[in-house]
Length: 49
Image (tube, rainbow, N blue to C red; front, side, top):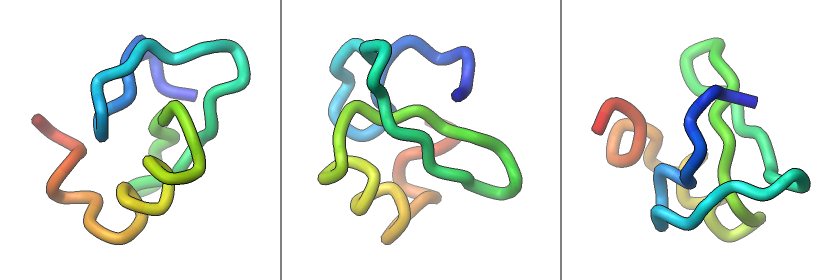
């Protein structure tokens, strides 16, 4: 999982059970399956903010 401590989709704090989505070859931590789906659908909207 990335070093970022908050979900890039909703801004919630990441817990130990955070999900991981690979974006441009790098793991990005998200808080839940819904945020994982949103990140996969439009990674440019959430990564690099």
